[in-house]
Each structure stands twice: as structure tokens, then as C-alpha cells.
Length: 166
Image (cartoon, rainbow, N blue to C red; front, side, top):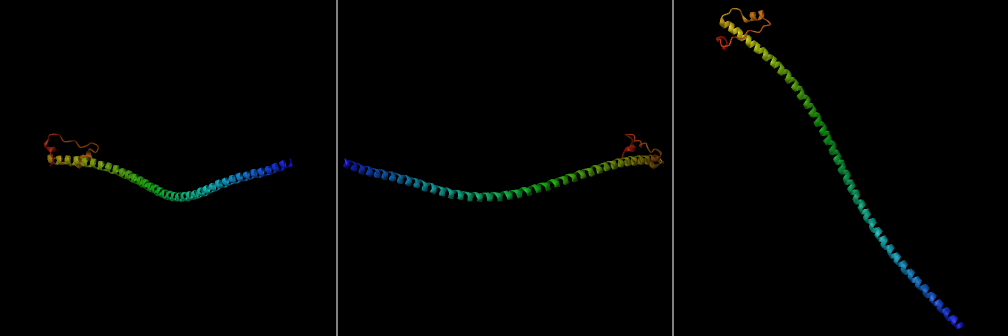
């Protein structure tokens, strides 16, 4: 029986070594697969990092361009607002000038109307004086006007020869 034990011991040792060898091969395969996955993940990480860096650089360029455009637009807006303020001030000045001219025009119109009334009165007096002279009356119109300061000269009778212009 000793031989049996020795052969079983060898078999047990040989199969244990074979099992251990199989386990080691299995572990090597697992480690190899894990390393391959890690290498792929690292390559992917490197590619993603490179893309992110490239995208970040592009984004920085675009941000800088947008900032410059913003500055230009702000400058143009400020200039436009300044122009609008100038135009508004000019409009207000023009409106004030127009109002002043209208006021002067009203004053001159009133003055002209007053002078027209005076001229009408003088014309009436002249017509009355001329009629008096034509009729042969000796009293001048000035004395007549002095005698009747508040009364208007009597209008000529319509249809008479005396109201025809000379």
C-alpha cells in the first residue's frame, strides 16, 4: 500500500501543480486583459484630454473675439447715444427758437394790425378832409377833429358824388 500512497501523492502533487499552473495561467490572462483595458482607457483619456485642450483653446479664441466685438459695440452704442443726445439738444434749441420767432411774429402781427387800423383811420380822415375841401367847406379837418375828439368822422352818404375817389 505504500506504493499506492506514493503514487497518489505524486498524482496529488502533480495535479496540484497543474491546478496551480492553470490558476496562474488564468491570473495571467486576467491581468493581461486588465492591462489591455487600462491601456485602452489611458489612450482614450489621452485623446479626450487632447480634444478638451483643443476645444478649450478654440473657446478661448472665440471668447476673446466676442469680447472685442462687445467692446466695439459698446463704443458704437455710446457714440450713438451721444449723437442722440446732441440731436435732442439741437431739437430743443430749434423748438425754443421757433417758439421765440412765433412770439416775435405775434408781436409784429399785432403791431402791424394796430398800424393798419391807424392807417384806416387816417384814410378815413383824409377822405373826410378831401370831401370837405371838395364841397368847399372852409373848416379844415384838423380843426373838426379837434372839436370832436371822441367821435369818429361821419361816414359819407352812400351814393353821393363825394364818395368817389379822386
